[in-house]
Length: 341
Ligand code: NAP
Ligand code: GDD
Image (tube, rainbow, N blue to C red; front, side):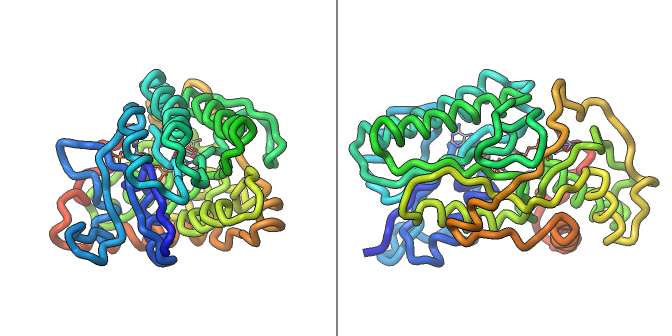
């Protein structure tokens, strides 16, 4: 019998890579998809299978983390072996604009899903997408024992989700774990996160479609890894003998400025000629430096990141150049200057 997994956030960057990974391992994959007036499934369209086919192994279900009753119904119907809670309003800057919605989705949404697991009586393993943003102002290096000091409504909501996940492990004996993941990126990264905003702009400037890129704080330090490697870490956490929380990170610091320079250099462009400052991209409170220590994941799970920021920047620039040269994909033609965050 193949295992069954439910992924919330399957249409996002990580959800799409995780769905690929689980399908390659023979899982039956179920994904929660928000109803939208236009299709929001571009990242998983290549995985689509007609549910009428007897051998279909991926199934999509309408639902939303704000709708607890729907979650109970789905959990009862699907009866999954593993649940990956990846859904969230995941943009830190936007969480200052929409703090209440972020709290409802990124925070309370997690306990709605945990309650659905409990109420439906499903015996599954549960993964919570926790974040290095929870460390916020705590100085690096950060590991599983570092104090949380969130600096945004998003970070605070993730701290809430972290603790309720631990509480359901302790209170109800649920195999529930937090993956505390540092930033991880890919060609599928949302276009308003800084790495993708940069690599899309590089491709467009190189093609002569734009001239300038407006940016915020270039001094922030992040620990950027490659998303496909991180979803492998999520899966390994749920295969472990014991439920434990793990940091996943590369341990390699990189400033936004260094990422910019590598990306522009790779396309043969001088970043200083094209980058301008705009304070709309600053946050009311910034997280200055995130550098993770993933020693526990390496020791227990045999997980180690191999792709670091410079290689990542080159992978993403190459992918955005290729995508721009692709015909018939109208969404690619959105100007990067209209990025909202
Ligand atoms: P992402 O690309 O922004 O994807 C977020 C997903 O959540 C999308 O599928 C989105 O659906 C869905 N979603 C949002 N609100 C929802 C709601 N109310 N109900 C149901 N689904 C909802 O994020 P990601 O980069 O893949 O990250 C995955 C998870 O890991 C997130 O929880 C994020 O906060 C966390 N995380 C990410 C990183 C990172 O560096 N990427 C690091 C640490 C933690 P639509 O497609 O319809 O918008
Ligand atoms: N988005 C954006 N846009 N960020 C900018 C810009 C800009 O124009 N200019 C500078 N930055 C800086 C931000 O101030 C921040 O310090 C850094 O670039 C990274 O910003 P993001 O790419 O938006 O990511 P994040 O670190 O705030 O949050 C991401 O990583 C978290 C894990 O640490 C998200 O994926 C979160 O969901 C995730 O939890």
